[in-house]
Image (cartoon, rainbow, N blue to C red; front, side, top):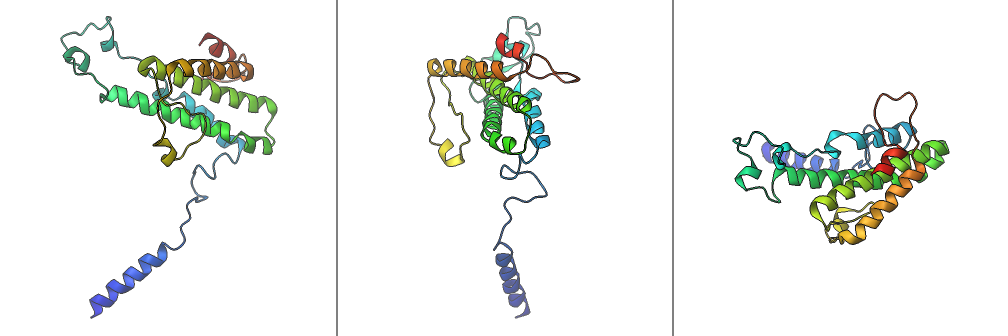
Length: 203
């Protein structure tokens, strides 16, 4: 009898604890409460420059590869769309695109914070630069890909189809043009590398 009572009491407490969930806790970041300060926007923009978002091709995919006796997916002829390099490239580029779209969608918050116009232009420029670079990489490797320039939820994401490469390339140039317009020619006092007007012009 006691055991049954304890189980029932535990179930009641468990159900009651789920009554009111705090989906956006203030103690940690979420997409709903982020971008509330210039520091958070700056951190988000700096995240564009992580190595995962700027992959280099392995030498085993080129004629420069000298260790031809070493087994690899290329040499064995088993390289395909499920290979680790392929899935990582696809996932990381879209992760970066989603972050660029989110920053651009939240620039109105930055305006309301009183951030200087020079900084706002720089942040926008870096987001456009990143999005253009990611799509350029995707169409180079995959041709027709999914093209989004806004924040989408999971349900909508599953309904999206591929857009022709011929339609995406002009949009890539448009993003680079916006980056060129907004990015500075150089940064003062920075030890880390960031996108500049010259980099956008070159790409």
